[in-house]
Amino acid sequence: MSRLRELIADPWVRYVELRAERIDDPVRRLKYLRQMMAVPAWLDSLVFTRRMAWRAGIAGAILLVPFGWRWTPVTQGRDAQPRVLSASVAPHETHLDETPPANQSVWLVERHKEYEMYSNGLRIERRFETAGDPRSYFQFERAGDPAKAPLRTEPAGIVFHTTESNLAPFDRAHNETLRRFGTALVEYTSREKLYHYVVDRFGQVNRAVRESDVAYHAGHSVWADEAGIYVRLNHSFLGVSFEGRSTGSGEERTINHAQIHAGRLLTAMLRDKYQIAEENCVTHAQVSVSPLTRKVGYHTDWAANFPFREVGLKNNYKLPLWSVAVFGFAPSDEYMELADPDLREAVRSAEKGLEDEARQQNVTLSQHRAERLREFARFGNAMRQIRAVKETD
Image (cartoon, rainbow, N blue to C red; front, top):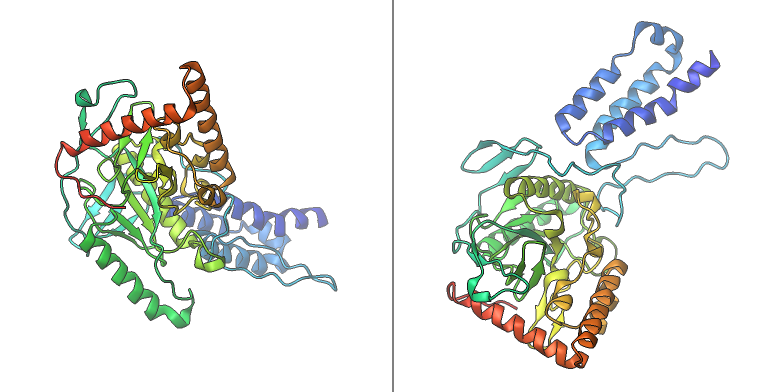
């Protein structure tokens, strides 16, 4: 009897909780938890004294799992330490048990003037949605003629940003301030056409610019994949910004669990809708360049700390830094100091590749960089031929 009690007490609650955490869909998760609350009569008779505690644990799991909380049994005794649970600020790694499958299907369930609902639970607010210039861009081949590059209109990737805006403390006392700041931010973003999406601090996903149009979120920027090279990502990539800061300390820089959950749903929807490759979901710091200084990372938001795994992606900080590898841009000391360790290693690897190429061509590294940068200018000039491109830093 004692062995049976051990199996159905705290470990059983933990087992149910872990299973629930692996279910992304909130409706399926709730259905599963409700089923597990239905205690069989034979089990109920054996563990009558613990039945209410068991049900309380499951009920708590229903409330806590959707917000990223983890249930922890309280240890009794002289050495027991109090445990503090917080749902307001997400750590750098929250270690979700699994990521969505690459072929996850997400579809539009209903569309209204004020919002859209999707099959994975995503809700997109449309109150401030605005139109921009229609998207069109060249997908350049690495060794091809820029003048012969094919013209594309579908987004090729996602660039993740932070708004780097002023933040109020995330607590009940500042609720109205938080709402006011968030609304003003989305209004400004829509008016200036800065991002396609803004995820506010309550995890609300706001569409600021239509997906079919250009948002001026990336400035001078570079990325590449197996299909080709992308220059000026305002035209080729969608911009998703989280209200918050990626530098600083503590709550001032870290997005919260509600934002991460919303980002996960939004990323899954956009990837499925446009068949966006996982390696084309990157941060602003990975794509930003300065043609004037010939350095990478004119903007450094999400140079580190972006929760790739938590939004359903692999650690894309490990990807090659194409601005260095293809066009010879160089990292600054400040950039290397801010960068995630894996991003720093990606920069070093790209630098080594440039050195090897220079050696093979029997030119100095400086000469090789200069030629690569001239190639960047040629690609940029080709983009200008599409239309007058609005320049942003």
